Amino acid sequence: MGKSVSANVLPFGDRSRPFERRRHERMSVPNIRAHPQGERIEILDMSHRGMAIRTLHPFSVGGSYLFELFDEGRSLVIEGQVCWCKRVAPAEPPAEMGVAPSFRTGVSFVGIQNRHLESAAQGLGQLPAPSPQPAEDEEKLTADRIERLKVATSPDESAELLLDLLSVDFEHLVLFRVRGEEIRAWLGRGPTLVPERLMKLRLNLDQASIFQHLEQGGSFFYGMLPAMFAHLQLLRCWHGSLHRECVLFPVRIKDRLVAVLYADTGDRSLAPEHLGNLKAATELLTRSLIDQILRRKAAATSNSS
Image (cartoon, rainbow, N blue to C red; front, side, top):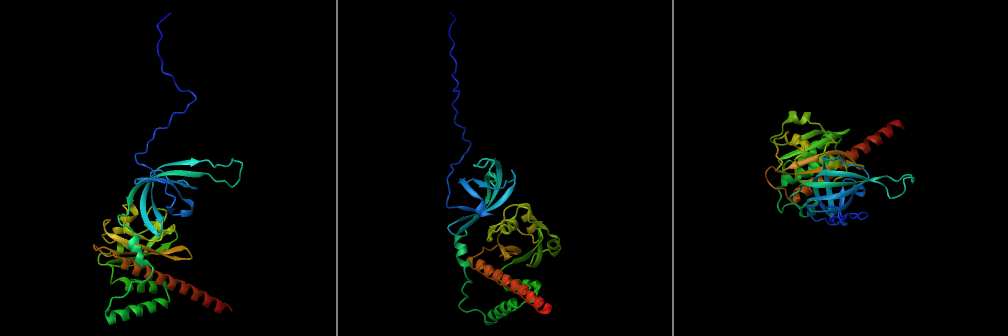
């Protein structure tokens, strides 16, 4: 009888534990919801370097997207790069009609706003209180512009009055208009604006940018712009910098994005009162545009009757 030889025993029928590739501990975050399309994005788990999400639509692997995360009134905008995207079959049998497949996606955090919005957002509810002894002529001029904005007869007049109201407190102000699927410059104020470049600027809403984030329902943006191609095209129009704080507020009519206001204070930091002024001003512009639409409809009805 020959000498016996030992052999490894393979555990047939038993599935070995999968290799754990995650380098960072994952946590469930049921209190945090994501935007855009917050009701359709479910965060499965998250670490300080990324997150896994479930959606009803796929994401492009390698693509960059902006997500706004909400938690108890606080908001944080992050830039994420899609590392993987996998289709998941519905739990119900395929014969069930109307059951859509879902997609699980791994997102790596590329850029995160380096400042929290909690303190800044405290000043968004109302206009900041005026200084104890405002200059009488400046206060009167501001009140006059607000009244003129309320009764403006054209969008261009409203836009001009809006920028006149804000130009004292900001170094660069640019109002963008949505035309179809494009963002185009409308009006601007600032010492280094390059009108020729602004007039030629065309940003597609399908392109990853803050504009796409706002078009999909984002509340506003506050911080430093992520290093995306669209933002580099934008900043080129006034020799801007990615290291400069800025604010972008959307102007919506019936949930439809019609314009976006960009503002910065140069190399100075933005304060909560700046955000309060911008929010109040964009609300005035929205009201002015809606009133113009209503007046035009009323005039058309009157002429036809």
